[in-house]
Image: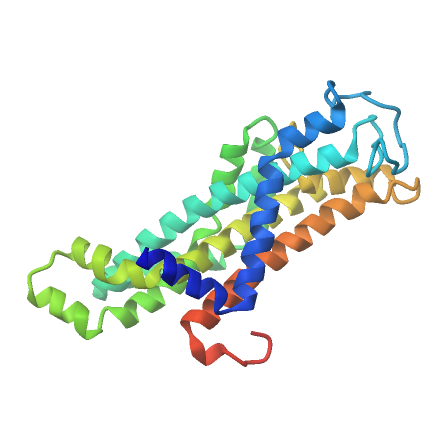
Length: 291
């Protein structure tokens, strides 16, 4: 109960964090409900099947966002694509955050030569131009699943989290309670688990959100230039299809606007969460312009 009350105070103490979490929860619930939404839209048939309806229908009560060049319902397709994009972001975010946390805690807590080697490796990966490498690797992603794509994106997402968390670990390891734990013969893993990790949870959350958002937009970037996974429909692929078919000139503007609107909402939600967490756990940022 104490943990729940503490979490409640954190959520209500900052409107940016509350708003960001509410938007994020709404998007996640919408994505989770995508099979139910698709079933309701189709009324017994698959609304995103090829030639399910007449092509290029304008928005109407039957098709809220119209249909595309293959006769698929754009609304159902967009909701399904949101679920795919969020899944990619979640998988890539978890993998990159775990890798970044392990790297940061080992480097920041051990210090010395270990910190030097791991920090140098992190900096090398951080400065590598990731998007050209993703373009090169995309040749091998045409027939792979979402998990493989997310893993590929996670490879380039972990250094930011590692750098951010390492800096705070370096600060925390000199605190008196950490020194006291060392004197009382706590092992390194115990100190990390019981003394450092609980104080780092907000920053780990920020790292996860940044990694997940980066992965989602990296996939969108690959899709928009036609280099994404072949069989997967995510938000970027709908945008690519809208551009390639001239949907705007045909009056099918929702096919272009809807995925961009959802990406904008997702970007706003995660950034509000990041700013809110920073303000809650770093009061010096309150009132700073842009925070």
